[in-house]
Image (cartoon, each protein chain N blue to C red):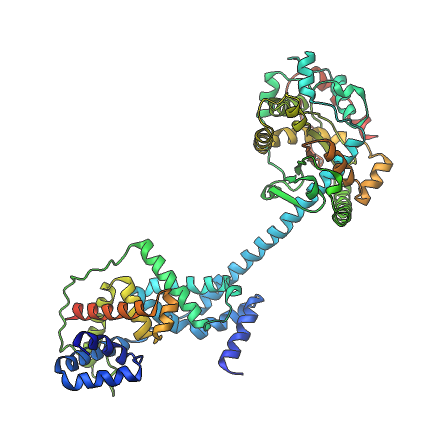
Length: 187
Length: 402
């Protein structure tokens, strides 16, 4: 039984009220979903809260999942919507394109070190990542979501368009502007 | 390709989504344009940085916490489903019960015109509480065919109404409304099914029906209605048998107060009112609205029929519970009289609801309030001196023997 079939079986069991099946679906997707949410909202505790909310929403609405997209994509769509509504309701972290960030072109990236990094390397990498996270947090919400969907979740333009409910052209232009803006913040 | 186009193409190329033809075009441009090569390096660097952000796994114990939350929600959902399912069933049962009891009552009542209006015309309303024997006669005429039905419901002293109002904190029961006659047998619309939870013993129900020809009722629907009615009636009788004998004692003042409130609500809308006790050992019908349309047609209604009907229903929802509850206590002992055998058999068979359809064909609006009596309870002291109270309270043993 392959993963897709296995997942379909789990979903069917979940529809019949099998909480164990739901637990297995959660364990299968929790890390990917949590990471995506964390990158969208930028706060660990908010991300945990939203992730739980997303899974519970999915649990309640499992009967409406028709299998047109993958279950994970369906989950992620719920996650994006939840993040947007949550962020709007909190009115938090509004876009601020004037945050001075002391990073330059020569700032080292976050590429994982090839071998065991020394303490200094680790500290440098951590600092770079924090700057990048901070810059992501400064992006307007739709820009941030576009970058997370593409660069962290690895969705194709068409998938992003379906997730976000917009055209592929909009996705491209939004992503282009998002990266330009992010680069402007980092520079 | 110019540099502006190239920048967009670079992004799509780095994302792996640039078509081959466009990729070749881009490569030709990059070969000639150093600025765009630098731009591509910068974009690639940025994307690399974002992609290399550490992967944050879900917090430890996330799945377990979620499982607990889902389990709690599952229990809650199950409970809600149960409430929806059985709440609707309870409402349906209440409607069929009302239909059954209505038939019993319609066997012995005519379809005269608006009693309060008649009474007003005849000047029979007084400010005095009626003597007990008169009240008893009122109750009797509700069950028996009698020309005395033209006797009007008395309007009661303000004190009695205040007395009734003092009991306004009593829990409400289930309210259910039957729809148009074509719906009586088949389906019912619950008004406030949640109220059924407030008092599992004392349930109140009311049924409304508008005039429609009997032929409009499909035979299959009639059969279903009869079957459902029979089931509902049997269930109710079984429930009633399990109840202890009612021994609540109420004063005439209580009943009078109830009547006053009914009269106040219904009289304002010029609708027929009767107060009476039923019938089968478990319930009684104590109030009835009828002839609203007839009254409207005959110019006795002060407002358009639809407005009046809406207003009556709204008013009943707001104010009938007190009336019904107090009268229900009275019904507790009145209902000891057995249902006449023939009617009892009809009631058990569920065919009794056909009587309601027959009645509905004659009456534009029937609203009955069904009372399931409260279980045994201590005697309720007379709340105020009333000449009827002493008489009525002296008779429970005699009535219980019936």
